Image 1 (tube, rainbow, N blue to C red):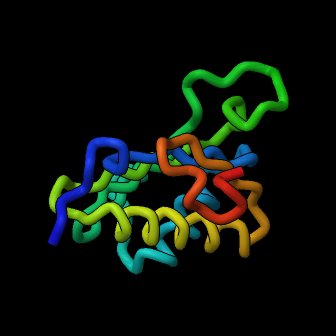
Image 2: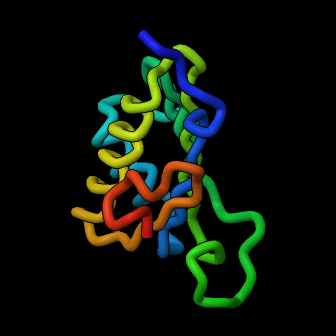
Length: 114
């Protein structure tokens, strides 16, 4: 098994909603585990749902209200990180959320991460 390269260790998803609790609920539904203060820990990953601390008033996705930060443990292969993040994006989108990704591998995600 090949370990994750540094470029694949993290990804930030931006979700266009003020409803952080809804995103936490949907993330928990997908991962099948409860959160601890909106942080999920599953084998190989930590997922942190939070308010966007850098939000301004623009319509750019980097200013959307809710963020989902995904951190992969260093032993997780790159392709598994992409699969995990893509699954999370797809799940949130299927629940009606607009989701965009900011990470070095966003071109490998659904719709190129946007």
